[in-house]
Image 1 (cartoon, rainbow, N blue to C red):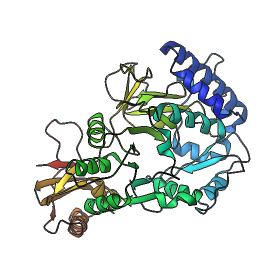
Image 2: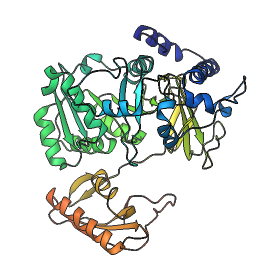
Image 3: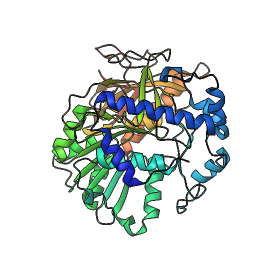
Image 4: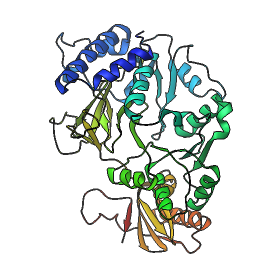
Length: 449
C-alpha cells in the first residue's frame, strides 16, 4: 500500500506548477511506470492484461480499459485481496450516520449509475491526500479558507434531492458527520419553482452556494433583477459544464470567486479553475488522452474535440484507473493564462439551456429529469413555438407507440409547469423528425423556433 501524508502531498502538488512542461511530462511518465509496476505485482487482472508488456513500454502500449469489463473482474482488479465487490457495495449503502472507513482505512463512493450499472470506487489515503492537496492549492486558489468552515458559515446547495443522487447523498453524510453545523446547510431541489428557491435562499442567507451551472445561472439572472439578495462569497459548480461565458455572467452578478472542477468518481479531480474561468488539467497527476471514434489517440494539439478520452489516475494504487475509457468530448490547449502554467482543458459537454415560459425562467434540467427516463423514449427535443407554448419531439423505441409515448410525456410536462407558476403553459407533441439548429451540427435538446 502506497502512503503519503498531507504535508508531502501539498509539497508535491505545489512543485508540479513550478516545473517546465517537459519536466512535468517526464515526472508524469515516471509516476506512470511506478503505478504500472505496482499493479502488475498486486492486481491479478492487470498482471494478466500486462503479461506481454515490453520493458520499455510507452503509454500507447497499455491496453485501454472499460467499465463493464473492470466491474466484471472487480475482485481481481483491486490491489488488496481484502477488498471485494460485495463488501464495497455494502459499505457504500451503509446508513447515513455511519462514518466508519472501509476496512478501517479506505473511503469509497459509487458512480451515479445513469446507465443502470453503478461502479463503486475505493480510495486510499495516497489518492485522497494528493487530490485533496490539488483542491486546496489549485481549485481554492485565492479563496478565503475561513468561508469553507461550515460550522461558522452557511452553505446552500441547489441539486437533485432524490435519495439516489450522489450529490445529495454526500450532502446528507456531511450533515450527519457534522451535526453541530447541520443548521448551516440547506439543500434545495432543482425541480422547485425558481421563485420558491429565491425565497428560501433569501430567508436562509447563505455565504456559499453550490449547484449545477444552469441553476446557478438562473440565480444570477434573479440577482441581476434584484430578486435575490444573499451575501454569497463563494460559488462552486458541479456535475455540469460551466462555459466561460456563463462563468463570467455568474461572476459579474455575484462578485465572488466561482469554482469549477471537472472531476469524476473514477478519475478524481481531473481539471479545475485556478482563480480564472479556464479549466487547467492536472497533468502531473492525471493523464487525459483525447481519442477519436475508433478509440485511437488524436494528434497532440488537435483543434477538434475528441469523441472520447482515456483517463489515467496516477495516484490510485488501490483500484487502478489506467487508460479508462470515458465518452466525454474534450480538447487540450497550451496554457496562455497567467493564473496557471497547466494546460487548458476544454469540454464539449452537456449544457442545460435556460428558457422563459409564461414569463418565468427555467432550466432544461427540469425537462431532462423526466424525459431522460421516460418509458419508450430514446431521444427527445422540445421546440418552443411561442412565449407560452412548447412542442415535444422524440425518437422512440421500435416496439413503442410514438403517439402514446410523446402525448403522455407532453401531458406530464404541461402539468408540471402549470403547477410551477405557468398556468397558461401548453405542451403539444409532434412525430416529425428532430430539428437541427441553424448552424448545423448536433441536434439540440432545446430550440426556440
